[in-house]
Length: 66
Image (cartoon, rainbow, N blue to C red; front, side, top):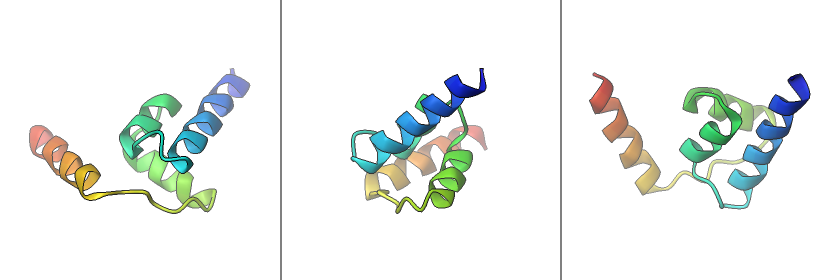
């Protein structure tokens, strides 16, 4: 089971690095929260690809939950 999760995580990181997945999509692929994927990307030395649209989407989602 651990290998499967690790594989999903590595796939999510690669998709994010290549610009083929947003931060939210990468979190979904990896099966973790957005804050967790952000921490994981930092641990792996991956620079942020966040764009204005990602930021605005995050704010929109935050408003839904508050």
